[in-house]
Amino acid sequence: QVQLQESGPGLVKPSETLSLTCTVSGGSISSHYWSWIRQPPGKGLEWIAYISYSGTTNYNPSLKSRVTISMDTSKNQFSLKLRSVTAADTAVYYCARDQGSIAYWGQGTLVTVSS
Amino acid sequence: DIVMTQSPDSLAVSLGERATINCKSSQSVLQTSNNKNYVAWYQQKAGQPPNLLIYWTSTRESGVPDRFSGSGSGTDFTLTISSLQAEDVAVYYCQQYYSIPWTFGQGTKVEIK
Image (cartoon, rainbow over all chains, first blue to last red; front, top):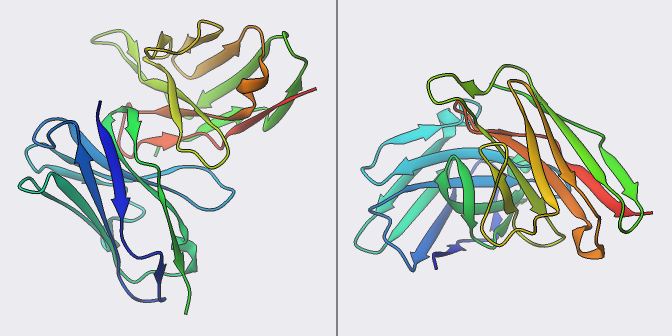
């Protein structure tokens, strides 16, 4: 059974870079596609980006200029960097295994942007 | 981007009664080459990640009770809970995965009347 776990700072200052890592267990990230999705408190879901097993990436155009997704196959991890954050980036960030539909999600990590 | 619009925003249904949630996409999500509609449905309970219920519009994910069903084609889709149970209280989201960026509906909150 695939399991995903997000890790990273829960508090980021405005204008700084949000960095999160997802550790995958029970399966290799060298297969499938892997995504980041976020959910502001009390609001809906927003897909951010995916990275494929071969390293191909795709981004939400609304965030593309600020986002980088990458992977480290040796650690079975993939990561998210979101630059120049503002309060609007405060959200629960989920990592997920992406098949278009998403059957496997991490538990999510709340990242608050505040000084 | 394809906009997914759900209706209603919330609904209250008596235990054992039917709950119906609609989702309309701003453009067709039907791939004619394989005749598949690229729509999924999720259930999200408070404090939990979303849980996949339905994919390819009408295919139930393993372990999902058969009281959940999906239907539709093109731009109009429906999630039906045939007999609402107490554990079905949640927010439900539709999603299209026809084109990047994947997009979700705004959510429908289902409560017990």
